[in-house]
Length: 184
Image (cartoon, rainbow, N blue to C red; front, side, top):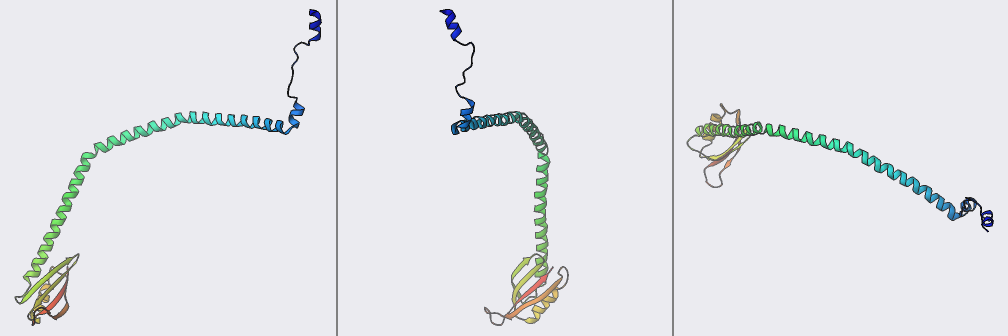
């Protein structure tokens, strides 16, 4: 009986359960074949992207290390220059204070020149200083003393002194209010 079984069974024969002709002919078979091919391509592309990201990490690590070294070097330079910077800022502050003092000395000398030129009957009510100009307001009992004040102010250190507004005083009768514009 054994010989009979051996004769009836074929040896090493492959059985294909999905025949190619019928599989390619059906819609489901074509969709399945397209999907497996497409997913294979997607997997290969994804693996390539992952490998590129993995390999670029070495380059990015090198860049990061170079930037960290550059930051450390520049921080050391800044710390080395800190004392010079403090000295420089201190000197700038001192120069600023000196300029303010020098300006106020010039201002006080200008005011002193104005007040020394005022005749006896003239009363100054306000002196306004701006850059390059001074406005003097006051009142007087006589227009002659006002003109004498303008003439006295036309000399050094002033470039010009001009009489601006002139009118009778609203507060005190008999007095004349005036404005003199001085350029220095």
